[in-house]
Structures are given as C-alpha cells and as structure tokens.
Length: 164
Image (cartoon, rainbow, N blue to C red):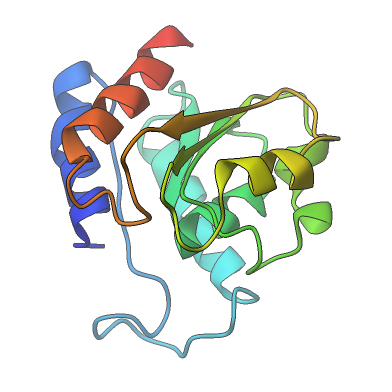
C-alpha cells in the first residue's frame, strides 16, 4: 500500500479528479489474515470495489494495480468496474486464461516497463493476444519498480484515466 508506485498514484490521481482508495492485501504490513497466493486476495479486491461503490455509487470504478495487485485486479470481475489498468503485471499469479478482464469488453490497459524483469511487454502481448479490448503500453527505460520513471508512469496513468 505504501510502495512507491502506489504512493505516487495515490497522491497524483485525486489532483486529476479521480477519487482513490488503496489497501493492503491480507497478511501484508499487519493486516489481518494470511497471504494465499492470490486466491483469497480476490475477496480483498471485491471488498474494496464494494466499499468504493458504496461511497460513490455513481462514480465508475477503475481497478488499478501494480505487480501482484495488477494480476489480482485483472482477475476480478465486478459490475461496478468500468475497466482495468494493470501496471507491471507478472501475468503469472493467476493464469491469464483465467483472468476475466481478458474476455470482457470493458477496456484493459497494461503498462509495462521496457526493462521489467518479471514480464516483458512482448511476452505480455503474446499472453494477451486473444484478449478483448486490451492495449499494452511499454514505458521506455523503466523497470518493474519504475524506480527512475515514476513521473512518466504517473503521466501514463493520468492519460489513461482522463482519456476514458
């Protein structure tokens, strides 16, 4: 929840008029429960969507996740979601074939660093070639953690949020 990527987005998106919510998955940084390899963590995502929708029922929910959270976001269908934005998804926590975002007509946009050590943009394109309404953006010079590319990542996310 306090990783640099998530923190940068949590600070930047409200300035663009996008309400945000962040949370820890079960068992992370003192939260209740135990890590479950992405299985029960899906319930954490669903609970967050329900909470966001309850707070602002007429505001569409865009699921944005980074790394493990990106795979989980792509794995959760919910009628309140208007699309997915996956940042550096490893596409291996959950099999891409089992990710509901892949067969859904709502937009899915993946942002992957040129030097991501866990999944290259080229590999992601191959794994998601059959997905509906999916785009992949590669950020040059960026790695999985966007260590020296946070401003470019924030700009890319803001562009996606404000374009739709």
